[in-house]
Structures are given as C-alpha cells and as structure tokens.
Image (tube, rainbow, N blue to C red; front, side):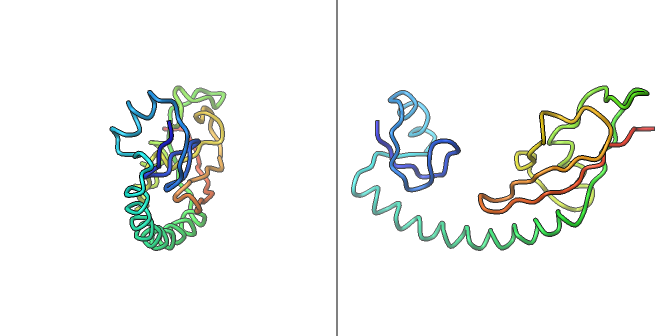
Length: 149
C-alpha cells in the first residue's frame, strides 16, 4: 500500500514522501492516527501548502533549539542515587531523572529527547549524554551521578 506521510516517522520516511507500507500498518495505524493519507492529487496539493507553513515553523524552532543546545553544552546536572560501597547503583538513572535534574536548574527537557550512551546508567560517575532537540540540532552535556547521603 502506498501512502503520503503527513508527519516524519523515524525509520519510515519524512513528511511529504510517498512510502510503501504493509496494508495492515497503513489501514490500522498510520491513517487512523493521522500520520498518513492516500496519495491523491488533492492530498498532494494540500500537503504542499501545509509543508511551506511547516518549514517556516521548523526554521523558527530550530533557532530556539540552537540557543538551548548552546546552553546545555555549557552546563551539567547532578543526579543523586543510592549506591553500594563499590559504586553500583541500587537502581538506574533514566532519561526522566536526567530531565528532572535539568528542570531543577531551569532547563525544561522532554525525557524522550535524552539519548543515553548505553541502556540506563548503573554506576556512579560522570557521563556524556546527548540530547536530540530537533532533527537537525543536538547537544552533548555532562551528567554527574553521585551517591545520595
């Protein structure tokens, strides 16, 4: 089944592309969720006009995210967690905990934008974390994981 994407979907395609997907995936997920439509001439024209508005909006957002990326690169955050005497955590540090630590410093992040180096952090130390703010903008920041007293 061929569909016209209304939004960018990771590992499938970008907004405005015509992609081939399985019939069930298209009918049961992409179309009902509003992510795709059938590639008719009317839909192509409508999407083209929406695409111009979308690109202008993305350009404005990109500037804001570049400022945030510069700010993130200049700061670090500290996450406290319980650990044993060898430095192994009794749990793990997740994306949500990192976003919450930055929120305490006045930087609002969506936990979905935080990209962990491996799975979750399970030991004390300093870690470089990547934050993907925009499809074209990402930042690298440091996270200090220290023992809770």
